[in-house]
Amino acid sequence: MMSARGVAAVARHTAIETNLLAGDAMKLYLISLAAGVLVGLVYALLGVRSPAPPVVALIGLAGILIGEQFIPWVKDLIDAASYSTITVSAREFERHPPTSPDPSDSANNT
Image (cartoon, rainbow, N blue to C red; front, top):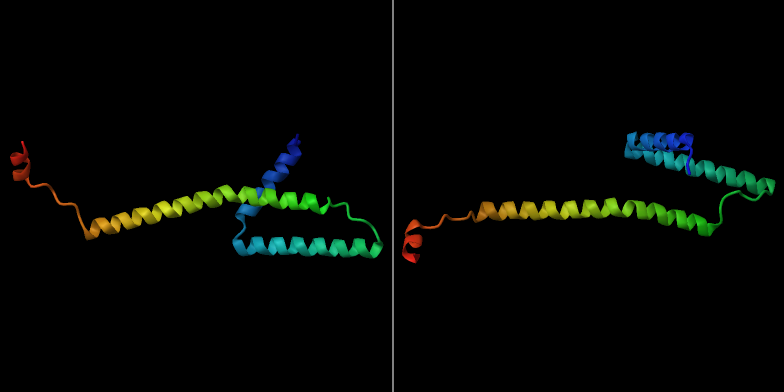
C-alpha cells in the first residue's frame, strides 16, 4: 500500500510530465538516461553491484509501460477510424444527396 507521501509524489510527477511539451519531455528522459549511465559508470569504477532489479524485472516493467499505452492507442485508433468513416459518409452525402420520394408514387402504391 502506498503512503500519502508516495501518492502525492506520483501525482506531482504525473502533473509535471503532462505539463511538459513533447520536446521538453524528451529532454527530461534523455537527462534521466544520462544520469543513470553516469551512476552506472561510477558503480563500475568502484566495483559495486547496482541495487537495480535483475533484467527480467526491468523487462517486466517495460511490458507494464507498453500495456499502459496500449488502451489509449487503441482508443485513438478507433476514434480516427470513426472520424474517417464520418468524413467519407459526409462526402458521399454531398455528392449524392438523398432524393425525396415522389408523392405520386406513394399514391399509386396504396
